[in-house]
Image 1 (cartoon, rainbow, N blue to C red):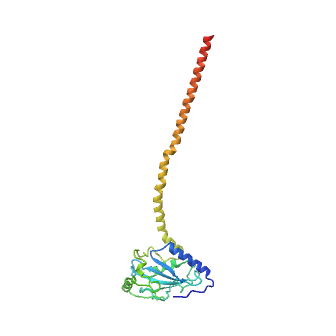
Image 2: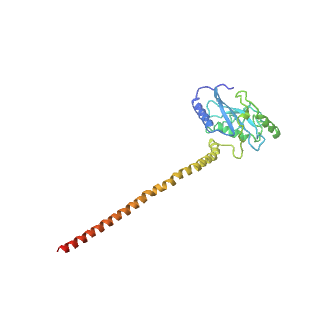
Image 3: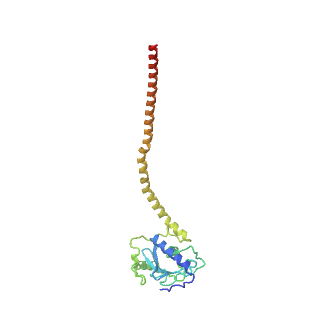
Length: 257
């Protein structure tokens, strides 16, 4: 287990790490899980699923991400602890998103970015990179089958317990990200489906009151029309009565004369 880094200049790193912890809890993924150790938030343990249609399909791999004290301005170190046939266990992995290549790292990237990229890198050609292994596909499939029962001596969790009912990630839908935004974009279709589903359920509820309000809306108009008609009848009655009285008065006057 790594020792906590110096406290000097850690305030920004701690704030960023706490933010990522919240985001991990609020927006989980079916492809990976990750969390810091209880006694050191700079030391994270993660578990990823092997991508579909590769020799890693069905495999579940556990590993570590060690964040520098000035994270996110410098990249993390990462390593796999579960045998995979792709990376040496317990040895730092040389990737463009790791501490081996700080020149490529961008502060906008996150632990989520690193894990998505690591899944995409699994089936790629090692090309002799540090920490890589060149096992055959058959050997890697054997490692994948054995990986589900692997148990982390630090976390105490068996790999299979992390993903008991979820499907493996599809690399066609999970390209290697260049920025944090690309990771967010990958979740946008699901969010759109959720919003559409909500809209489908809300729309009928909004239309029902409007249909019920239609008779009520028409009622004042009908009453107004009835009131107008009643007023007209009264007016004509008054005019008729006035004419009758006038004629009667003329007749009486003539009789008297």
